[in-house]
Image 1 (cartoon, rainbow, N blue to C red):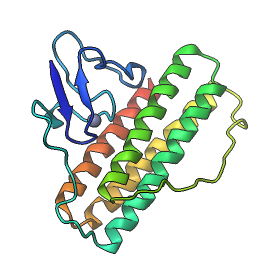
Image 2 (cartoon, rainbow, N blue to C red):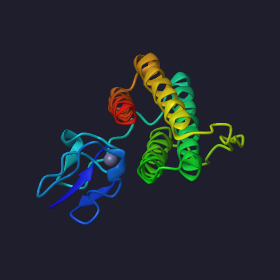
Image 3 (cartoon, helix red, strand yellow):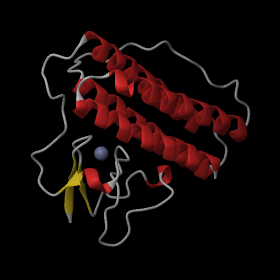
Image 4 (cartoon, rainbow, N blue to C red):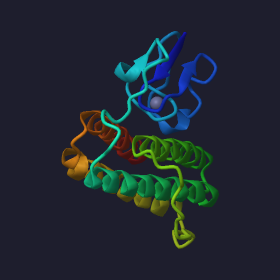
Length: 186
Ligand SMILES: [Zn+2]
């Protein structure tokens, strides 16, 4: 079995289908591949042919769309960085793994926005420390807040984008972040 995710462009096969398993409450079991393990997209976005990856419909995006995508890159990179550092701070092994896998997924989300906006240079982020969060519980709470912020961001700005393809991607990523909130709440 081999599928290609039209949202992130990654190829999914039997070897890598559970690669970020700690970031999902379900898993790709047996023959079935029900979601993309790299970006979290649901199975309707996974295709058997590998020549379709969703992109902006028009080459020249409007200023407002570029601004929304630019901010989305930063939002996802900050969240990836948070999870990466939170993984190092967390005491429970399961929570550490979950944070590690979530970090990789948010990083892929940033890549998706880079591609959609045709951005070539990663933004430089301010260095943030998270060691003020003293317990796993505090880290989980912080994670949930960040995911909620991401969902709100996508919900608020999705409709300000003219390009229907990009709008669709933001909608997919919004539901992935919604699943993250559920995962973090369990
Ligand atoms: Zn994907």
